[in-house]
Length: 73
Image: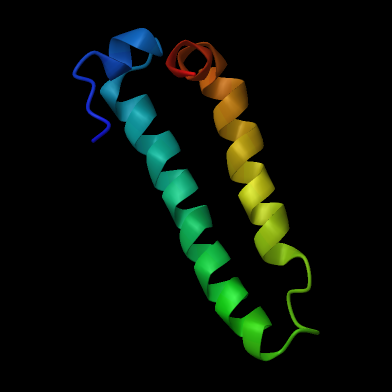
């Protein structure tokens, strides 16, 4: 289990800032799910959308939290 009570301190973030980022990335993940399901049935629709959205999540979190990610690896 990934549990860290000092997570906000380590990434130098407030609760509200973290909440907004997490909500945004979770919304993108939900879009990945829906566009991915549609794409699996109709491959010509949303051809690269799930990939682009996933890349946006990875790039954004690496940019925001790169120091914390490096410590964990």
